[in-house]
Image 1 (tube, rainbow, N blue to C red):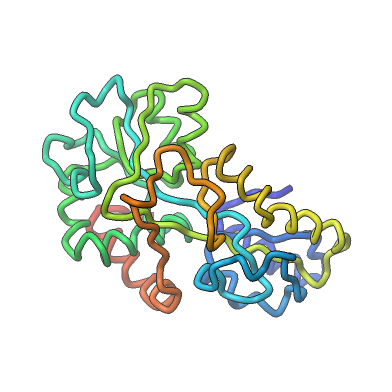
Image 2: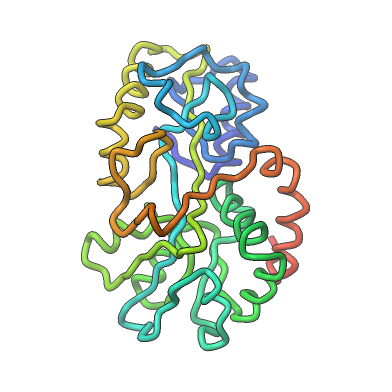
Length: 270
């Protein structure tokens, strides 16, 4: 198994494919814009319960949302005595220099959150939130570790990045703000060059089944792109919080300009 940030993983896939040495039986990536140009590299595949999946969670009939991540807000309960309750609360002056953010360019999952902030919370949200001088992280893993250690107090994190820490007893509280929960489905498929295509189909069939999706939600802290979810992550009330999926056309065409705007607003330089 090879795990890497979305862009790095795609680069490896392209390099191996160009050399005729693509070894993967399954490719799973959350940056849908990077996966779309590679669709022709994948076999025709659909799970037995294909009709049970939301069509707006897919970019191709060959690629399936094995995992659907969801954004939440987390905070260290030992440091935060007046916790935020909404996305807009993260702009409060009282939270100056104690919040954190994952950078906009870190991958497709974060890009989904960035789109949500600007399209749902307002064009001035970044500017307001940047005035709290958040600490910037390259991904959710080091940010969640820092939150557990008390180096930062709060901030937006994908639920699956922080839920295991809470589950292990860390002083962490997680909630899903009422303005909405940005969600990012993965794109998972079987390359035409797969050496073990039957094993790959068996793997994806189980992952995409109700049993597999239930496990992914309950044990890993994700959502599902099934039309009828078997359950929700702990604390997620679908009557209060609506799932927000990005428009794929916007997802592709807005990326470069908006990430550049975000970088300028938050003073981030690569």
